[in-house]
Amino acid sequence: MSQPANPSRPPYTVENYQQDESIGFLVHQVKLRLTQAIDEKISDLDITAAQWVVLKQIALRNGETATALCKCSGCDTGSMTRMLDRLEEKNLIRRERSTTDRRVVLLHVTENGQALLPKVVPLIVEALNYALVDFSGDEFEQAKALLRRMVVNLDARHG
Image 1 (tube, rainbow, N blue to C red):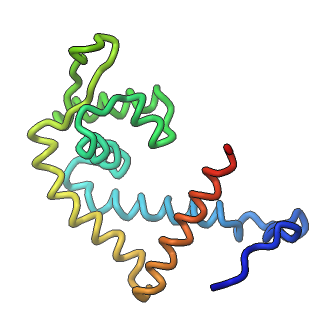
Image 2: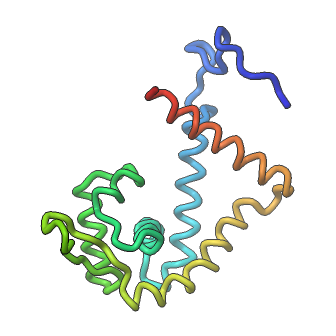
């Protein structure tokens, strides 16, 4: 195991910082390219990677609200509303008022949405595996562990 970073000598300094070599930039580039690869794979199913993420979240948490989706995705409410409108127009989700609180709108995957889910997953898997084509099993596990640590470190900044 490597030594923990020395807080008095952080990895980045103003002198050594280069945007195109920064972790944030590289993670962003991976996300962009992975999204493009997924979009290419699933375009014949008339859904985008962004729509897939929201549809899958709703499927995992039947009755999810737009507010909860915004929190987990980091998306603003206006963008989320437009995304939900598109998914509803495609008959992949439906909105339903809560019976306990009329102010709350719950989101559910329709039969069409449920039928689409198993068609998309193999294509997502294919795109992910393409990104990892030359990774060993250990490298794959290490990459996930490092990314999880970054998430934990960033979450910890709030106390």
